Image (cartoon, rainbow, N blue to C red; front, side, top):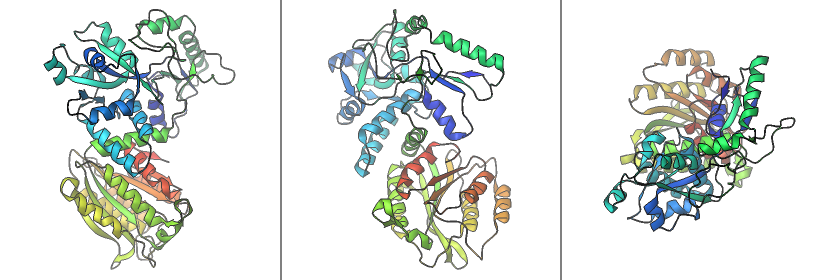
Length: 477
């Protein structure tokens, strides 16, 4: 493990903190900045009269979506790259919320995924190597990247240089957070880390940053900065003051960025563009009929059904989805019933959607949690497919209450036995409301490697919590 970590963006720290709640660095200070831009081959930017303009990213993307002759618009996988992730955060903020916004977001992400790259260098290789019309039309025509990417690319004197189209509206820049990791407690190392930080944030270092295409934390740049056409002298960025007692000259990293929002963006991308198999298991016990004050007293079941419809609309046709309902005595002594087996959405989306209206509460039903968790896990294991993300996502508003069911000790023992490292299955438990037993759910979650627990105390936030779960590898929230 390094003592000091300096990634290109605070979004990496936020994602790590979301995965490991104990990750609490002792010092996080921004030492450089590079704003998000849209990189575009110069001939195309000049033809569209975009050089020197400031355009909202969502507007620019919308223009591409509406034109059959638009240049190819690419992105680096936002689950692996900060420029791709911050671009999606900007698009999501511009689109807003609501069912219509979900449709627009799915359309935008599906479009971007057509020309996605796993690594930034791979995407840069797709830009044109000649300025003739045929090459320009066949090559990548636009992509959200950092200003530094454009400067570095042009410094190599390529046949076709890139223009940087600067963005208006809310955009999170890459902020290069200097991080002293939590395990560093040795006094000499702490002193050395502080000494290095002092050098990186001293006034002369601003010119050193400029020489490699980076700005200072406040968005201004030093001498030798190869500013693209239209580059502002200062960009919106990390300008908050250092913590009390610190005189670093740097900025406060991750200002205004929320870890759950980052995971939600990654989850939306995963749902819209990746392939997976999920068994969705819904609590239909009597308490799911209780009203939700924040949803005009609609029942928990109605709120959950609405969230399920939104979640299903996000899933691409590459997914396969099955649906169970559970309480107690749903099928004889068995506490659950299958509404539809795991079905490819490419052919059975309407059939899967039709099950959602069946998720109505059973007034006499209790919560047969333990048996349902075990049976759902075993069912997912039986139907496991290689090359897919196989998972069980279970929604519940209560705690186990089933006199005819297995004990917690039996559940945990059987879950341990059922796990097969060659067939990994992620178990995601989503608690609804304030009556769930978080300790009970946490005990179950910790038994299955790589699983997650999320609590939506306000049931109207179920969709957000669901997307956070899809966007995280593990997690307890």
